Length: 414
Length: 85
Image 1 (spheres, rainbow over the protein chains, first blue to last red):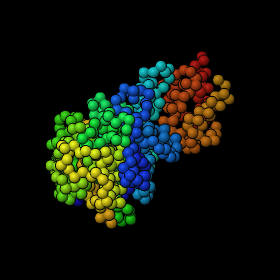
Image 2: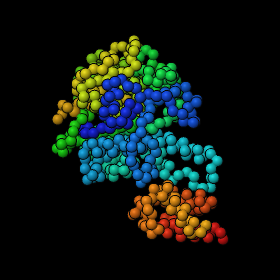
Image 3: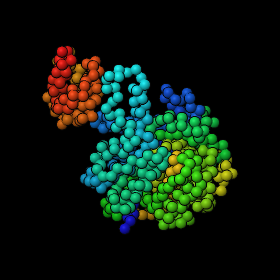
Image 4: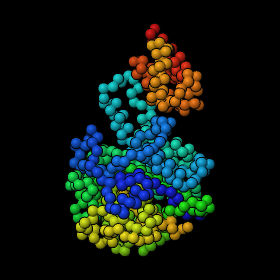
């Protein structure tokens, strides 16, 4: 018998702030976290896009070397937000270490900063006869570094799922975590994703002509989802985590219910690894509704993937129109912070949980003139004070991977 | 390198790079300072740089039985002696 799965904690480090108060203020005030691209001393001079969703405020981690020795920058973000949700949830250590709590957490490609240091050793002039590659460089840089540094720091002994599917990494982590709890494999899952500052990703999208280049002198004016003047995505950094629990156990222990995951879908376009695919995305949106057992009219808000690429936004708009029509509100939260890659799904979910709790919907920033090809939707262009009951969170990735999560407001459940 | 010079250097490495607080020469490295197998490999790399030559696999494997700072110093003295022969 499938079980209901609720969200009992969330936290995010984002280009528009860390913690509920700062993030909500930025969303309410329409504040952008897109800044000039930091110089990495390697690639930045060759990249046309000079903007980045930047985490530029100090974070007091307080981690000791016992843990930091196996952590690259990406694991710092991951362990910070993981610690936040464990503390926020009120789960005791006995449960956390019982094996009934698992971790589903990923990143786009581990820690590129550490990987670069390894390559510097390979191609540098260091004394090759010495052990110049650090013994822990693999642990710091490997693709599942976030998930296992979390298990190590908090003594978590349950299942580990380390999704790594670029832009759907953390939405897959949440979806797979939801299925773990729904079908009784685990009683709770700590889910999320993180990605550190990295110019490799910017360079890749830049070469594909998918990055924003027209607003280098006015970073806050890009990205521009669904806008006629959009010119591509903006890469960003950050981390986020949510704690999923079986509904009855969460209520029994008096946990705060922020929301309920009521549906999840994940499919593949089965072909091109880059181009957005209308059939694939449309199918994803329908599969999520089927999984939740609800109809399109039950959904109040669509949190669109909306990266602000020229074709991606049009295809997504067509898919939303085909499944939902023009009734639900549509917002694109990447307009505030750029595309935080593997962590975008969980950061967007955290923002949606804050908005559902406080009864408002943040508008898509920079949506000054809606592209006529995207105009059939009910775009949120100014802040709306409205209680949202169910939201659909859409994310799509290179490789043709599509996900959709359906989340119900926790206020309806307690 | 004399033992007192080695001791000064090793203590500096343990305090600066491994964040040891008030290390004692006969402290159990694992129990009292959280020193684990990953740290042991890292320390061997630093010992190689300090001595100016590489350790072979057999020499490195012998280091895995080290439990205290005095054990580290004994180990380095033996390595130095064998490389001087």
